[in-house]
Amino acid sequence: MSAAATRRPISRLSLRGRVVALTLLLVVIALLASNALLVTLLQRQLVQQLDDRLRTAATTAAQLSSTEDTPGQTAPEMRGAVERDLTGDVYVAYLDADGHLRHTLRPAAHGAPRLPALDTAAVASRDQRSFQVPGSGDGDGWRVIAAPLAPVHHTEVDESGSVVVAGSLDPVLTTIRHLGVWMLVIDSLVLVCLGVIAWFAVRAGLRPLRRIETTAAAIAGGDLSSRVPQTAPTRTELGRLSATLNGMLDRIEAGDAARAATNKRMRTFIADASHELRTPLFGIKGYTELHRMGGLPQRADVDSAMSRIEREAARLVHIVEDLLLLARLDEDAGAEAQLSLLLTPMDLRTLAADALHDLRAMAPERPVTLTGPGGDGPPGGAPVLGDESRLRQVTSNLVGNAIAHTPPGTPVRIGVGTLEDQAVLELSDQGPGMTPEQVAHVFDRFYRADTARGRTQSGGAGLGLSIVRSLVTAHHGRVEVRSRPGEGATFRVLLPLHPDSSVSNS
Image 1: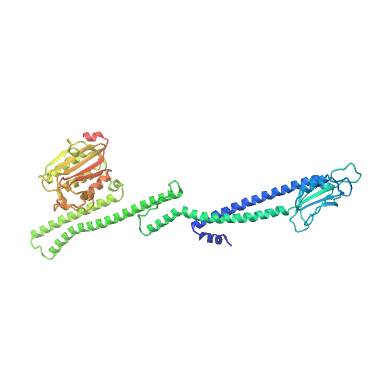
Image 2: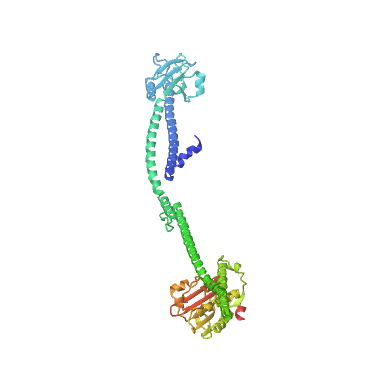
């Protein structure tokens, strides 16, 4: 079976199944290794104990005479000591100097061990070290120790030779087998219990992942407001994952809302632009058709129609230029590069004075005053780094807005100076004012608060204040409006103050 075929069934398991299977595999490996080490150490210990008993018995048996039929040559108490040391299936025999069997002190119960040649030289070379030999029966082998007989000086009988003491390994191996069976049973129970515990523990540990899965399914279904419950501490992996996912979902929802708002504004912009462009185009089309059908027989009628066509065309050109300007301002935040702003040191007092003259020329009936910011004190210097032509467009649009959306004769105040680290240019009127809702939309494109501001017939397309905000933003400034119904409106332009004092003193 290939490795790919082996991995295929594992890949079909769930994450919980994989974790449990991996845990049980590691436990099985650990149990097998620990059990093998334990069995090996226990078997070695039991064999060592058997060897120690055999060595003691061999030492004692070497003191006995090898012929039991000779009176006075055996000691009953020493034989008893040998019997006490020899428990289990033990074989004791005496060999002569050539290694032949001379006498068996204790025969084996289940087949004698198969001894190698144990003459005097072989016994001496082993130096009473234990060794293992097979048995002649069905046993598991024998542990053997051979020791030379102790010399006997009070007899003329040749007592040279050796004694062999062998112990069967059957009890040791039987104990090991029983231990292995019990280990197998206990390990199986441990694995079953551990598997059940691990299954539920992993299930509880992966519950946050199931919540993440549920949240992802809800988001895939279109519910971008769903969030992953923050149940785990942020110092844990799941806690950090939940926090990261929630942050990502916040950005996705915000981006989706921004796209939806942009699409809505785009649709509204296209509809409003189409409406504003259609009005002068229909006027031009109507006069041309009237002329084609002979509806302008007199020269004076033709001149009047051409004058109307010229005004509508100029209005159309003005709207198109405003739209192009706003489009260029919207291309990116670096509007200076798009507009090629020519930034030079200048003073907003010059623009304020020109706006004062424009207002008096365009609406002589209006009282116009020039003050400091907020109407406090005389006008002050307001040095900035800006494009004078674009900032004149800002003041021109503010002046046109005040004239178009306030009744004739309404007083207007122009304020200029500095506030903290900003240059200020403001235009305030005492017209009908605006509601908070109208203030919130006053800079929107094509927005006109006609009913509240008393818009005259000369009002524009609703792009002037949008251009004001975009141009001020391109100069890294901002424009504010404060208004209440019946209390007029104040438009304030704030630009970064230029540190060149020579500008303000000029």
